[in-house]
Image 1 (cartoon, rainbow, N blue to C red):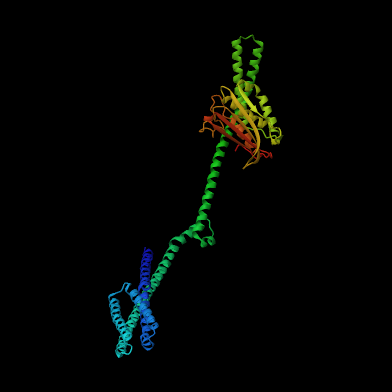
Image 2 (cartoon, one colour):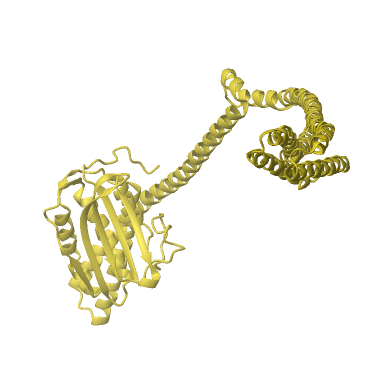
Length: 482
């Protein structure tokens, strides 16, 4: 507050002094100096008029009268210039006296000239001319006094200005000293109350004493940023660990469940299927009975498929990698699903690209993932539709060169609120689904160090699954369900 007051007061004083300086300069330039110059010109013009009349009386040459008229004009103009300025009362009186005596002086001169012209030998002319000498010197003294007074006024103005400047310097030096004193006190308080605690906090948060001594605020900022970065990293790791633990718990549960189901259900169901097949061959059954047996057989097959999915999800087989052509794999999948596609009234559009490079993958696992994706697309299109399959080599910023396989169906699309959940284990929207199909696909792609992405717009009635596999064939050997 005090420093602000000093600054404001200093600014006001400087503005006042600037105003005074400007006013003094304007007064001196526009009035005093001009008036002093006019006084000098009047004095000089009056002094130059002396002697011309004497020379004229001696030789009668009119050139002396012309020169006299010239200096009279100069005197008159100088006097008019002085009168045009803003004069004080004393200056006006002084100029009025000069003007009055000069008029008398001129009239007397002109009178002597007229008498000389009419009677050159008249002694009265010389007498009149002689009488004007005392008037001349009196007038010249008035002009010199006026000029001297103007010089004294200018010196007085300069003295006042110098006095103001000296006072302003004293005030300025005092204000600067007091300001520096306050700054020192403020810096001391700042160091003791703020910087020193900040330095201690920076050292406690991991900064070195050397760094914190250079710039406490920057050091503390870097330390806090480091702590925030470590906190964010730790939080991310904890989140991943929590997800991994949850996934591990699910996998353990699935493993136990799958093992129990496999040993408890698969063998009895195999026996049931064999007995039903034997009965259907040995007994003469009606059409209704045969239909019932077929329904039972289909349901047993569905249960067996679910059990097989549990087993496959819990204990995935090890990858068997080899250089494979994606077009060959897709054609094999379409041949395998030929009857299912006809059953669901689905048309497939696929233009093979055999010239694309081979990719190191496990063909069976890739076939399995494609079968799951195409089967899901068929089941999503209840009234039939179309599937467009394409393959292309492109660049992925994270994986480099990849082979991209896209499967686009004309189904109803996936709602936005569940699209992120469809690859979660056991998540399904089907009444008879196990919720493991897309989870298996996602894991197969991850085992190959690839990326599975889903793009769906329910308003456009389509869903596109894209599998991107690295062209170099690197795969995730360390992949586990954890």
